[in-house]
Image (cartoon, rainbow, N blue to C red; front, side):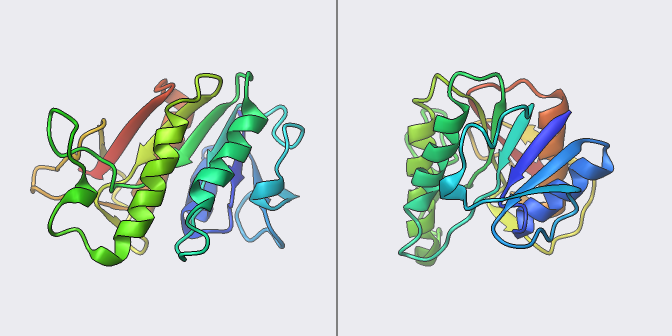
Length: 209
C-alpha cells in the first residue's frame, strides 16, 4: 500500500509516518525542506502547491497540516481545499488529522466541546478554524475523506499504550472518565484506519483505552 503524509516533519506527521513504515507501508513524505521523517521517499513541496500529479498513484494521503498563529489559522481550510481539489474524483483516500473542539457533547449534536465553559479561551480560535475546515470538508462528495478527531487532551509527549477506543461524532470517554490520547496512540489509530478502515466521508474519533 502506497501512502503519502503531508507535513510529515510535524510532530503528528512524524509519528504517523514512523508507524506506517514500521508496518511495511510504502510511505512518501511531502515536506518543505529536508525530510526529517522515517519515510524513505519524499516530495519537496509546500502544502499550498500540491497538485493532482503529486498525489497520483497513492492509495491514501494523510493530511497532518497544523497551524496555530492568528495569521495562519485560515490555512486549515485553504490547505484542505488544495488537497481535496487534487484528489477530486479519484479513489485515493484522504485522512485528516483533525481537532477535538468540534466533537459533539450532546445526542442532538447542537453543542460542541469548544462551546463548554471550561474550554480555554486561547484555543478557541484554533478550534473555530478547524471546525470551519471540517464543515467545508463535509460538503466534498467528490473526495473519499475521513476526518479523525483526537481526544480532548491530545498529548504530544504522552506514552504510547498501543490501545485505543474508536468513537464517532461525539466526545467519548474511557473507563476512567477521561478524554485523553497520546500522539503515538493516535498514529496507531490513523494507520489502522488506512489499512483496515472504511469510514468514507465520516468523522471518527479516538481516545486512550
